[in-house]
Length: 173
Image (cartoon, rainbow, N blue to C red; front, side):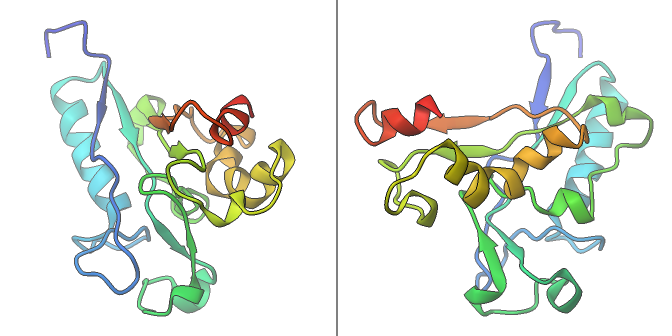
């Protein structure tokens, strides 16, 4: 609390889990113990209760339902029912259920993770990709909309890969 060199707390590194794994982090409006949004609120408020000067970093998840009305409880075990991203990279849930830190909402920072194709050949890297295709196929719906809508600040918490092509092209974008 009294160390002014600590400015932020990242509550959990890469909460994740695929649709058929247990336990796995989900993101919804419930108070389930595997609901990352609920746990982030609870932990964030506990931290801010001790030190209200810190920023609270909330990372994304791995999966999010394509149809929140049919699968809002993350009950489907079918991979086709989900959007996938890097561990920590999927913040689609913010649109439907934003983290609420009450009077401390100005301390909230969403912190997605993003990596280049030399780390793993995600679908959005197939074929020729550029800034526009990365924005359309990955960044915009997973986390960039948070910036565009002025929901909260963003800080890319992890990013990178090998300093070779095609990663250099990705890093440029």
